[in-house]
Length: 596
Image 1 (spheres, helix red, strand yellow):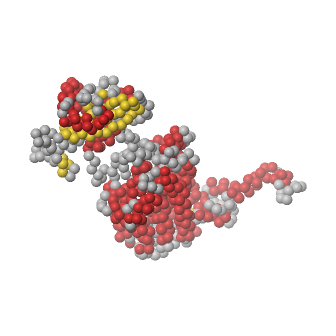
Image 2: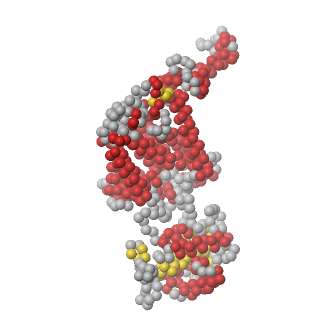
Image 3: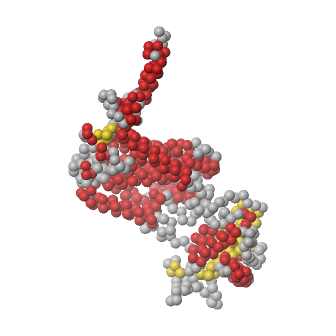
């Protein structure tokens, strides 16, 4: 007899034998963990058999368990197919937890400080086991979450599932959409690279337009933490990203799920009578129980989704990481994140307050109160022509505005600026300037010109000599010297020479430089390029890229052409061409590791 105040496992072994005692012990543990399902119930569930016990033990976890009380114990058969939900609500919830898990992994290795943030990112990518995979999954999951939540809202609108009695469910869905957008936006800054800094700078600048001016100015300072985004701003975005916004997201996810359980999943529009809501009254012959059918279906969906995310991250997608954030250098063609392009496109229409603040606010407020404005009791498509047309109109408008938000739309960048950026810019948007990956040993100090590649190889020497005469002691030469500045004050006469034969990468870059100039012949009339390499100090070379061209008459940013289709040059009083020179430069260290 045991000395304990309760029967021990040894007593069970003596009374029942080892095998039966172990089985009953395991069975009891499983039933406690699953809140009602024993080993036999799980075996029958996995085999797809009907339950052998009555009442149905598969309903117990919904009543007695913690997690499954948030899910219906059974569904209407019409809701278990791909249509009408497309599993978008379940996938939206899945991404909340997916982002939380991958985000916690990254948090372990991250410090929200401009001093350490960028080096932390490099450490995650290079030294942390599975670090790059986790970062890629987190970034790809964030993009997918924005898309899936948006599609879920679109699906709910088109099937009329926001109508009575689900108005508040829709309202919480709009809150979750806003939280998802801001969660992704706030995380954009954390890598502390050029893309992050300037994309967030563009987004944060919209807050400054909030009327009245004193409100906008203080909101902007509150968000940035100062006149420019720095240590305070990075810390605030970090706290928003990992604490404040996730708290709102989890609270409203719980409220949203609660309301879904209360009202049930709305049936396909054609399955309900007009004005009726029969989602909670599921006939016995139409019931599909959550365990096992819906549960196994949902596990399949998240398994396939996870597999796709992993495959994309391993083989195709890598989260971008550009150069260290530099507030003094504005990259060419910077835009807000893609899901805010529609606001950036609207800003190009006019007033910053109207299109940057009032317009988005009206859109989201309209979305929140939509169920209370649309009192049409029918959810059937043929009875909702106006609302469906409005929905397609909003989608079309958002698409057009997003296109307008692209960097190339409505923004005229001079040809010389674009070409210089193409030649010298630091890694951005997964691209880099052509000169950066040229091997250091091929960057032989000297002055080189695209005139060598504008003619055949037999005529290259004559073209270089002609250019030397053209700039020697002329206003053009003086202008080039002036643009180069004090760095080349002691050079004397400009003397261009042929690119060395043992520098094939540099030759390739110069040929591309010439092609770019040729494509912009109208704006850069009779233009030519120059690459000047100098030994700045031991192991460090300076590369200057210059473009010189004859000025032409412009009208609305476009070259004016005469009756013969030739551009009209701007001449001096003596009839000679007027030249312009544009320059950009970079420094390349011997041990720099730039790869194509």
